[in-house]
Image 1 (cartoon, rainbow, N blue to C red):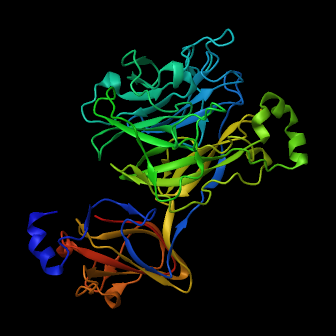
Image 2 (image 1 turned 120 degrees about the vertical axis):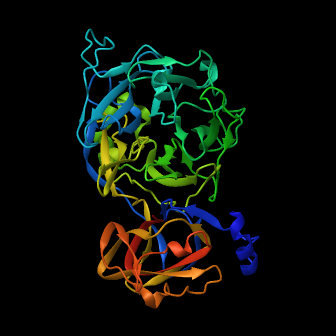
Image 3 (image 1 turned 45 degrees about the vertical axis):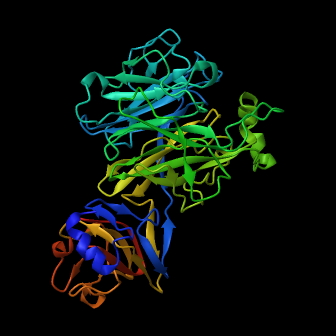
Length: 490
């Protein structure tokens, strides 16, 4: 808290209350951190729309068990990069698994370059990036290290490996994202259930590396079945150098830990890096939903993968804040549902790739595995509007929301919003005691009826709010047939 604000806070009785300093950062309506009162408004989850096939896993070295995909936007090279496991039917963690590579100029149309790095089936004309490197090819998950001053030979980093006798997760580095080497021989994280995608990144907000990986909530073994107890869940660790990591801390949640989260895919959101978005896979073991006709169509695939028809899964949305060891689960509904095609109501289908990327001025894309374990296995692109994971929503009858007190920095209030033709969004700025500030009352506001990812709201005297910067305020939102996805002072 700024020292110059202390007398003001004492006078208003807010010295002991929590006043969030949002500065000029963008805030999305994915949690209730800033929400105080709601009347006639809700937080609404938005579902990605299918946008076609990104990649078919149709090469002999890829196959029906291709999985654990990572998508990166390389802004310097102006291209998108994709990494994924190729597995046509080999046992997990064995030498038959490879790591494959694809790239795209726009995140929509992908190509598999002939890298010439590894001979597969007598030829190097393939997109195999890593081979004969078990168990690391099982779940190799890279990222671009944007830490200031990072050596160019370590510009790309990755964690990969399995638990048990394999030792845990090892650290890899690369200058170009294609040629990799271990940072050290010994594993860097050893406690966890690592047999899925283990993600990591440099956090510009926390100023450290952060890793998220799978564990079981109970953390013990059932002595009768020799299987872990509890549900699949997520732990987190941090590091200053990518080699020495803190002890893992199991993430908490504002909802009971009752469902299996198989991969968390937790990453900073590119448009608001203090907010970590998790497009996680919810696994439903033992939930067999297919009818007999669908099972007949899948009989050949079931021979290759007997568990295919025994489970189902989908993507869910969780969020966290930089530095937090808690997930917010405001939305327990499915984020990306299996959908109409029966081939997606199968075991481990619909697992999301790690990485939400911007693919247009007002569009972002995420990628979801479909038809897992089947001869038709593919990766589908899905789209959302920019910042459009969720929104503050009111229907035609209208509603309001008032924030908790916060401090901002900036001159104007920018909104990402959408209204119906009969709808509108208006904002009143209040002091910390809910009193409208002169010139910024509701009757002074010029309501917005429009659809825009960046629209400045104004009052009778204009849009300049710089006189209020650094002082605790509240925003009273008044909506009718409208959605507000995000806001920031800029």
